[in-house]
Image 1: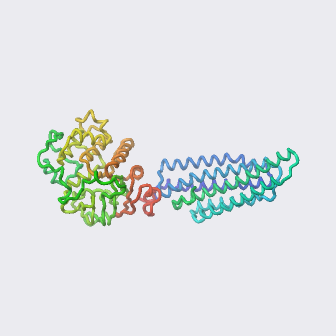
Image 2 (image 1 turned 90 degrees about the horizontal axis):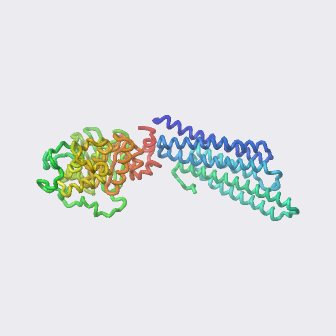
Image 3 (image 1 turned 90 degrees about the vertical axis):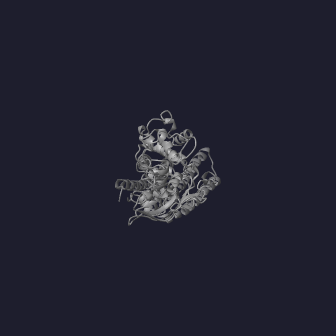
Length: 223
Length: 307
């Protein structure tokens, strides 16, 4: 095959994107675990690890820019680089959301809403993200389309969870101003957690959308 | 060389003609017949209808049907079917030996100059087969000018380089005006207006190529064929030629053969990909070819996986 070093660089970008996604998934898992177990040490690890992901992101961005500038990729190579360039942005955002989970862990002192299963929602988003990255790796377009449907389910999950929290807040009979202040913080933190996980799902669909474009030149899922 | 012998010869409008020996080519007062109005064919095909034709987006100006070209026993082109739109830039790309230059040279019958070349099928210019017996290749080449890889100005003044083609083709008019207009269209006027009497050979390579383009457009052709027009130029001169090609496409149909795929991507509206064996594998909008080609062989070629 001609242009061997160019082909090697394309392979390198693919491997680096997949590696970055593994680290991001690990951080998301850690964020969820920290939240569940109220593990402040784990939470700090997630927060402090964000710099590493930002560096990976910037390095990969530079690799893509170099390939565009120096190799003038076209056709499927061009779509691969364009898609990867967008996907790393989504991965970086997901890592930011994982650090949010770390922050919430440090802030939270108690779990007031046992009816809201944050862990189940977290598992759903992690599964989706893992499948999106497998689709990117294996160029599985069916899986890309399925992910868009799974995100609709995740959105409904988030909506139901938010409703439980807000309804509970309305029905709760609060005595003191201190109690009001505390519950407000707990509620907003939980609503933010739900929203952040829902955002992970959106970024995951973006990854699927860019993968579909990469493989089939189809912008159906890009919105 | 006299005017008449030039007309009868097989030289193109922009071939490396020898010095015609005229002292002044600026004269409007040409001797001999007046071939200005000579039609491409004796019948009344309206080959000059470009200015009157509606500027519809995809009017076909050049069309080939089942075009085969052989050099002796070697087939250089295999049943090429293509419709090239008017007033657009069409790029022809492909590996060495794929027949892209052969195809370009079929359009204005430059292959007539190659004894071993044999052509089957049709090549239509404005609906008329250019290989019909009643087509005069010299008149054809006034309608379809050509620019070559290496700049090849005549060893004459800048002015005469542009005027020479007008004179040998017996084109009438105010030569000063036509020469200035051609040099302006070729984006060279401002650089040479004060030195029209100096030799074309004293110009830089990029300027020489623009001079050749001015020479090609002076007779006001419909189509300009370019065979690797920037491959001998540095990046700055190449950019100027590329800008010029885009401008030319507002008035002319430009067909360019290039080895430089990025150049094709930058400047062309349509791209034709010829592959080994003289086959036209894909012809489509340039962005389609470079973003999502239909054929795997084209994908492999443009991404550099072979060739």
